[in-house]
Figure 1 (cartoon, rainbow, N blue to C red):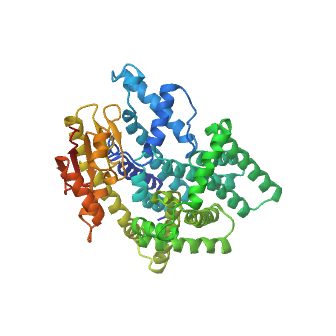
Figure 2: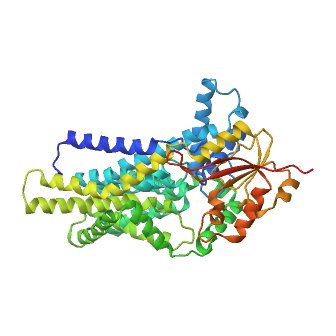
Figure 3: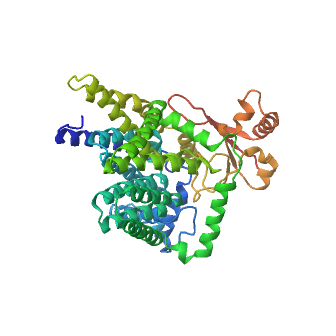
Length: 511
């Protein structure tokens, strides 16, 4: 398999990249503008505000500045293109919703490019390992899903993999400019999301494994660290310009990760379940086998690019998993930086096993056939998950049905209490409030506050109407609220229209 003709090899890589791109760009516009991904507005609205005001201070430090600035640049390009096309004549005519699709396209592009980085990194072990790793990563459902949103995890993963590739290359060539590139990639990862700074582990470990004088390795690490810090400051300058504001925001964020709300189960167990359900059990077994092979390579093999790549993949996976397992805030997307390295480890194990079988039974093309079968087994669950998610995302959801109906039937200027943020209504048309549950208040409260309509979601009232046994106090409160308001329409989920059950009510005016 590793001796495949270059033309075939490149053709296979092209097909893998094409598959990855199709998965990441399909249904890219789903949910715009009524059901945006969590935290998407935190980035896009600030990028659009920068475009409208010229103030480059993000006034927000939950994320560093790099991806916000990148989206600001893309928003400016989008505005210029829209102006040329006659969509608007000034900035006030371009609402933030018009910029999400282009912003998501940036994320999808970086997600697709990460497949290529996985290939070029893994091929240091062998060209066959590069192809298998790229194929496994191309169909990873978590990465496919998150590549559809303007969030920082996919771009951070891109820069971490860029740092990994530059690190291996720097160890091969040992030139100063290569270590500069490593530092820039690490700094960009940290400037995209703070925990991207863990990418510094990659050059540190590589230099420990590299042969050569100690002073040369110290100098390379010092240069890399300095360039990383400088890159971070250039890409996120207000961490210094607005230092007190940054420190306060960072301390609050760090405290949330360290002492956030208690969880019903340990974080490591939740993440293991995510990996089991998305990465798949066969792929996890292969990745663990890859860790064993990495340990064997470190003990028995000479220090080569292949050994370094094995070591980086195994050590980063273990250290990163340990790091996120100690945090109180747990989201599935936090696993994304691990996935490329897990794919490299699993790919290395697949190729090793295929080669062992080929040596044991020297039948023509048996090695290649074995590797293909193993890739299909390891990639089956992620592929089905990704295709299933895309199929659902491509449908007209109940959220979209409700959004369209509200725009067509509820008059502008109405005041609406909406207990679901999966139906985000335009603030330039309605006055919106988002109570956690509508039963937080009674009808009299809504009447006094001038609320005209209520939007109820089964995501909130499920415990009252559909759980067994029902939440009695909530059931009584919802029944009373619905009895005293006028029911207008209900949108029920179906095979063609996924989503929650949504009910819309009119609040009677005070006599």
